[in-house]
Image (cartoon, rainbow, N blue to C red; front, side):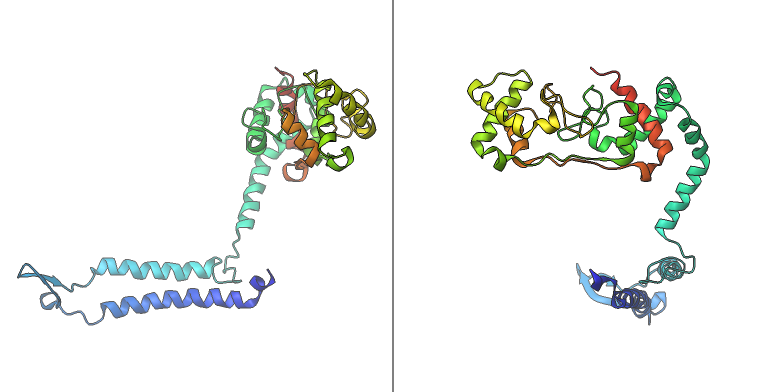
Length: 302
């Protein structure tokens, strides 16, 4: 990667760009030099149907002028804006600078509104229609890619409209999740459980916990392994622990799929899902509104 940051590439790009523009000027001059008056135009030597002659007419002056104007514009542009390697142009314009200026302008306009809402408790915001509409727009911009436009999630991305929360569904827990992110730490258990046989036993026990049909002999053996390896995180009864992000295993909500093959896959490979932190990116005021929206839609759990 260091090779692409060397001065060689700066000069390579700058020289190639300048030479290309000069070469275009020379080419146009060369192609249009020596044309005779209109009534003395030479032919190209191509004749069809006996007397249909191809003439070597010059380009119209206005059309030729457009070529020169385009080249002049290109040279002027490169003096003002980046385009010649490390040279940033006399205006010192950068896409980053323009982005930051636009963000600053928007923040100056809407910042006071977000700050006002930040002083309002989340439980009060869910009764404010305007606040929820703003929260919905924030959700669609920043969360819908993973959790879906309807917030019902997908495999590996939790449904935000149900009452099942891996890290807690109260306003403070949701806000903490948005501000700081979450990292799942479900390890791979294949070796510890004794290979394929142990995985099958544990899978059957997990099915029993969620009140599904099981092979009792295998589930009994799986229960003993559960009490040895899983109880510390998921609890004696499999109800989970929101402080650790350990999901409830007794319901029928499965983040990565609840079929036998998917449960086995989770045990064999582990799960390391990640929820990114939005605190630094969005700021606490916007996260506060987003929390209110997510908490509100979760209260209408179906």
